[in-house]
Length: 216
Image (cartoon, rainbow, N blue to C red; front, side, top):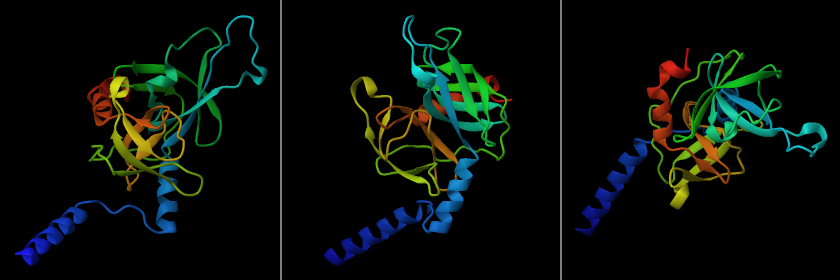
């Protein structure tokens, strides 16, 4: 009987593993994935004017990231644009794949879902896709754009209390708006808040349901 139970467990584990898509394993595969992520990940910066009477040397901006979902459309965390604009000097810019910075404006902001869409004149050099399976669960592996290799991200547990909308992540520091992808380079979710908190599937589903509002 014990031998039979062990066999059943082995079979079930094998089936579970077979259902999990294989992510990039070799350095070459990981480098190729990072190139795909680079076509969809953009830098976002915001200059918030300091209070009257205060001068910030160099006007240091707040730096974020976003997902280049379509030509002229960047999806990011609503935290990036919270309270925008706070005055005539409150500007948003997106860095295009060619390295140039372009002015952006808020086209859609859903603070409840945690999602914002920026309108910006930036062409999309590659085809962005949403992952078929966007469900988050403890232990799921995701990827963010890195230097030459993607950054490995692991989903931890659902946050609690006033942060209960988010999922906690295990990863190096990632700024809000950072897109998180599956092993095929398709978007799963975004970093929604500091301290490695990811937006849930519901946030992306809310955006998809509003497609006519944000995507040409």
